[in-house]
Amino acid sequence: MMFSMWDFAILVPCIIMALYAQGRVRKAYSKFSQVASAAGISGAETARRLLRENGILDVAVEEVGGTLTDHYDPRDKVVRLSSGIYRGSHLAGLAVAAHEVGHATQHANGYFPLNLRHSFLPVANLGSKAAFPLFLIGFFFQSPGMMDIGIAFYAAVVAFQVITLPVEFNASSRAMDQLVDGRYLAPQEGVLARKVLNAAALTYVAATATALMHLVRLLILRGSND
Image (cartoon, rainbow, N blue to C red; front, side, top):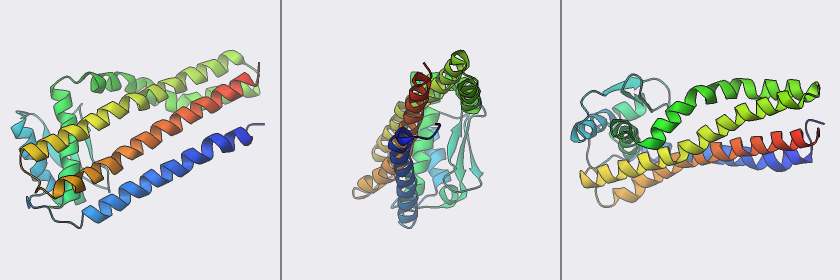
């Protein structure tokens, strides 16, 4: 009852897309982390220079463990770069570091979609934990109200994912503009750096599509109980 042909039709394409996106970003990182950048500077130094060029003097750059764990933390005002990006002087490091600085400039400039995403974060975190348990309780005990609450919580998760897309695309656009305008990239490197950022962006597209399809599944199950 809980796993039908609708589930295969909805979830299998999402799983395939998510796996493809993850594979693509890892392949791009593996490939372009082997290509030395013409600028010859590490990801950490790239981030620090770009921050200074944007007049952002209150954001630190730190090394963090793991692979592709790079992120900007607006609460602590820290650009955190994974070791391979932080220390490496390759194209992947240049592109990823610039992308994370793009988020820092969004924060400094009061970029509305970023602020909106931050406001959704607490509800999205709660929704990711509570939505499915609440929906399943409502489904098994034939409580439409409980199912609706679960759907509402999960809708917040979907909204967060949708808002994330323009935030990430804008950060990548800022990154490329900064790298090109600051002459961090040789003429032939621009296309290659963009491939790294496009591969990373695909993971957010896949996550959004998956979240939307899960919401559709919940709505179908909800409708089957009317």
